[in-house]
Image (cartoon, rainbow, N blue to C red; front, side, top):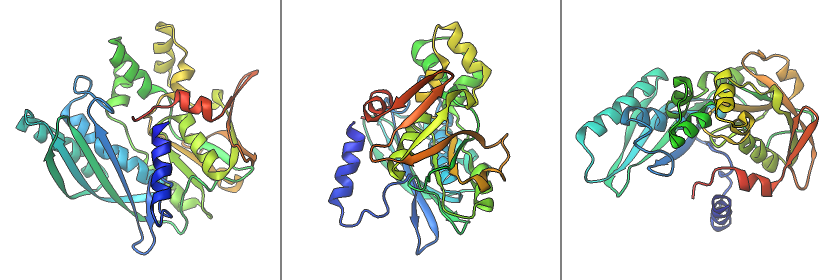
Length: 316
């Protein structure tokens, strides 16, 4: 997988790569978290499946989701745009209306950015958040016996994307899940108020299994979940059934749900509302070749690197 290979090259090339490894970097001397995500036309979106307004919303929301996984309070964003010569003024206006609306919802300020020409639409957002807890989250903090919790439901965004790509009818809920995700900022701040140690959190921008596997790799522990404990909206199940598909494939491998996977000790788990943070599994033993074990009634699937790379989204 080129992305993992390239990340490895970057880490081995830099003199100091200690701030790399999570979606947000914690700048201790400043007391802030910083993250950056880029959306590229025909890689992450197409203009026939979204509008400029929703693209603006999504570009901000995906970054706020990373800050949510850092239990950080969002404060500022900067926006860099690369646009074709043929782009209309109305596109920029609608894009920034979307940016503005999300920023107002989360009390975030636009602090600047850049604009340049390009063959395709590229929008890159850098987001800054304040550290509000004594402790931090990092994907390498999972420990044996910890509970694996998940916010929200899974599969809706990828089902919506499948409908768009294959020109299928789908409920508006599925399509809106794809084009207008809701970052779990409130839930991240709830965790910041209650934790008493560093914990592992990751958002599911690239999918449920993607987040679990990356936590397993970073923590050097295998993880086990029961797929039937993961919340799934009935609209996902109905869409899959009607089109002869397995809804659990959307749940496991579909990305852009932007939920949180939270790995916490038992004492923290007991103090969280199961309606918000649902237990779906446990952390197993330390492992030199960590994997994710997915239980499905009487079946068990072991997610190794080969299976992971075959099924997860490749940004290249």
